[in-house]
Length: 169
Image (cartoon, rainbow, N blue to C red; front, side):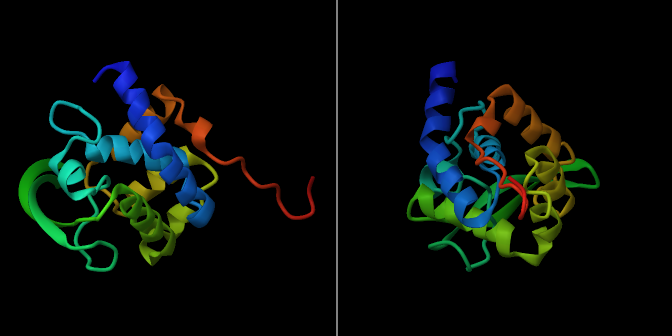
């Protein structure tokens, strides 16, 4: 991907990520980094995986029948005992990307599984590590990959400023 294509992708998904942060508290920077990582095809083109391009699933959200508009079955790589294994899995499909971003934020913000991550939502780097610890991805390098994307593309610029604690100016 060219730098211009990368910037265009970030600019396209940033409003959905920022909306998710405003509504659910999930850091926009992490959401954008996850969209980059999870929606890339094998050549590294963001938003071009079959799951993203055909089914509007930018995050690899598995089929729960709670969030999506249907499901699809695709091959994916999961890590079992730190080794990559190709499996066929059921994934959510969405009518449009915005519904996917909303489902992603709801999943992280409302699932008890991610409570520890949401407690650290004010720091995107800690949040990225926590979602990995909570089982968002089986990739042992997932948090590092997200942190690298956040840093390289200055994705913290898209995060809402932290709110001051009650009683402080």
